[in-house]
Amino acid sequence: MHQETTFLKAVIIGLVLVVLGGCCFAIPNIIHIGWQFHNRYSYLFYAVAVGGFITAILFSWIAWQALRLLQAIAQQTVFTLQSSANLHRIKIGTLLMSACYLLELPVLYVIADHADAPGILLIGIILTGAAIVISVFAALLEKLLASALTYKAENDLTI
Image 1 (cartoon, one colour):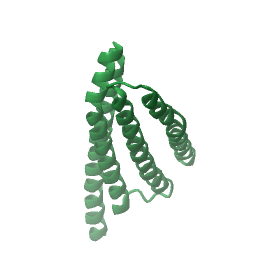
Image 2 (cartoon, rainbow, N blue to C red; image 1 turned 120 degrees about the vertical axis):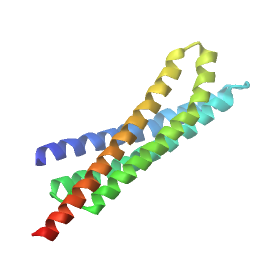
Image 3 (spheres, rainbow, N blue to C red; image 1 turned 60 degrees about the horizontal axis):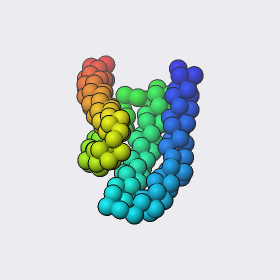
Image 4 (cartoon, one colour; image 1 turned 30 degrees about the vertical axis):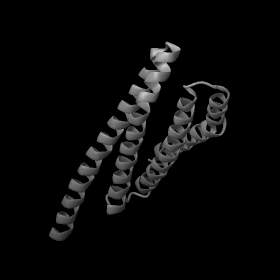
């Protein structure tokens, strides 16, 4: 069990580092391009940059909650209210992330229409759908854990 949780922790930390690297390098370039783009579409770059920063913050928070959940799994204390709260926070974070992506879709539509690149809009739709699927999965795990906690409480009272 220790190897699996260590591997998952390393993957999560690696993903967070990639996202933070994107915030440090890609988003400032997007802002710079928007600054140089002197026409009616320059605001789109700023909207994408703000959405990217919000997404990075939410992703980091979700990753922190996932690391806490993995820590509980490693310590074999996963059937607690704290784990249920972590799953709830992951669900809320991914819902907020999908709302952020959903608000970015009109901006991505204008960019895709202007650049004649429908793949840009497709990427936004896929990211929105993935965030919604993760949120639904976290909600399902939260309900499953709540059910297991009630069974555990009943079992503790019986013994």
